[in-house]
Length: 50
Image 1: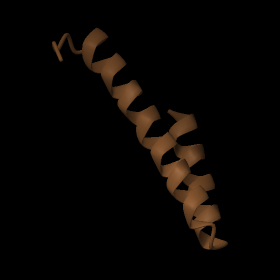
Image 2 (image 1 turned 30 degrees about the vertical axis):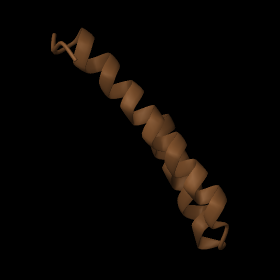
Image 3 (image 1 turned 60 degrees about the horizontal axis):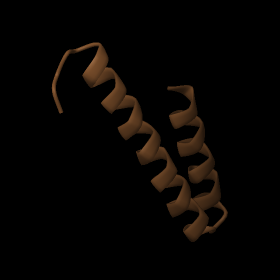
């Protein structure tokens, strides 16, 4: 879970320095990490069929 917060923070820093395209790329990476993390935990720990 630390990786998602790290990529979001890096994206925030990039947007702060007006690197919007790189910030959007980091947002996409963050969302992909969160979706993969949720999919793993929803399937294995909660026994929810997605």
